[in-house]
Image 1 (cartoon, rainbow, N blue to C red):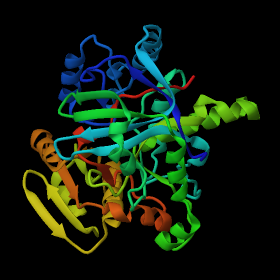
Image 2: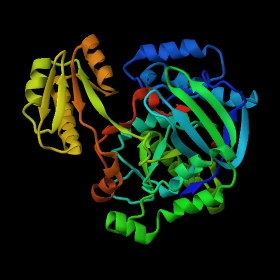
Image 3: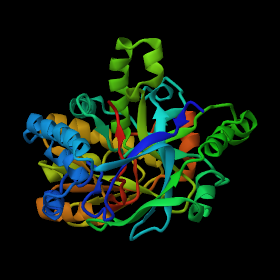
Image 4: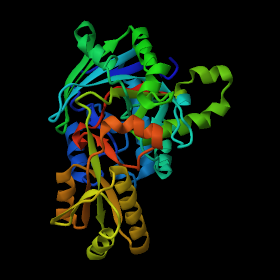
Length: 404
């Protein structure tokens, strides 16, 4: 299978990952105390905190931070921090305070089989609109990076649970290569080495059987993976590959490390995968004017919070509601000023409103079982429609890969 391949995966030579592994860089962007506490916890230990760029600091000494990140990658290699497991997959098992046994498979995907452009229909597609303005800062980090550490999570539509869940049932037969608690209330994670990769690839290939696709979607639409998380990170890898590809011969293009991206794949049907809506937190506005205008637009089930709750339960789908609300927010800020942030968790958005003022807009959930059919029929969801779980459940950086 060309879409998914085994990888050469870097795992640090340590037993305790509580300081090594940190949450995805695009989390807690309005909660500086989270990152301050994490930095104090990590101290001077080896940590992926030193290898990624938390987005809360995107406007803070950007060039210096990026150079330090790239220098740290080289230093970690020179210091012999990693073991490298060749031509393998890793089965990863995550427990959080909300779920048990969230199971994923780590390998590389071919960026030739992915596009974030709406009109194309590749094997790997985004679930939401890609904000192109968010890509350039990530390119600045990646273009001189020698390593990648993913928080990209792809979803597969395997209702029979024959691929990843089957591996989980046999995990005791596999070599365990890490087993550790995670910091900042992130739960626990364990990883198992998969060296016999051919049967795994065959099972993924079977999901693209023509009869299965027609029965499930009404047509032979060869969609294998949908981006559940890390959309802009994968888009960045794609843009970088497209810029590098013309400089290579055909033979070099086939094996270039830049052509691939390390990801975790999860089955959308597994119980531990659940979708949480992403809320809007709007500040720096005339609250009364904002609310008056917002209440005049068309939306479905929404709760507005400005210190008190106002609940609406109109008849409009979640995606249509988000499209209309986002368009209103965009126009209001353009004409009147203000700022919008995207927040996980009802209590988090309420706490931010109570602390800083403004308005929180709380949406209903999007049904995860309808995701692939929606993408096939309608393309992509509005940006920031859903998150897989709460903020503390987001993917933690742990495994790495050489990209140069």
